Image 1 (cartoon, rainbow, N blue to C red):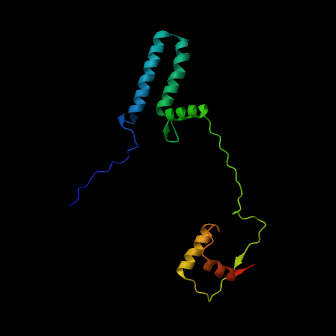
Image 2 (cartoon, helix red, strand yellow):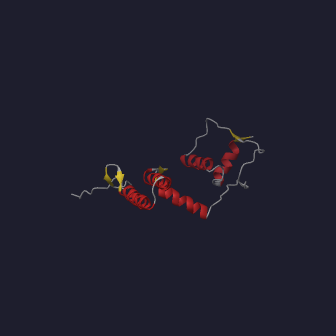
Image 3 (cartoon, rainbow, N blue to C red):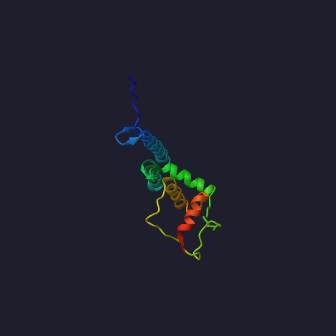
Length: 151
């Protein structure tokens, strides 16, 4: 009898320490509170609140806010990488010879009831339709389809 193995689930989920707080969030809050403690030893009064307040808000945002499912520090890192080397890409449609112009007449196929179609011919015709006419088919398919066309 083959051995059964336990397949890990939710491998992208971070480990938690205290309830919903993860190790990353705890370390960010620990470093931030240490920084605010050092600032509180250097400053006092209104200057302490002016300097430590925005730092505390930034630390809380950095630890708990997610952008598109990613932690905020990934978002900030990617933002600075974009500012360092922006990639400006413009999509420009270039018409080639294979594109259908709007001035060409539309060809309609005439279907007759008494014509039996083989499975290989149907699969070849579906390939022509799926590729938008890029695949032309074999010579047998082209000659048969030219007989069926009505302009």
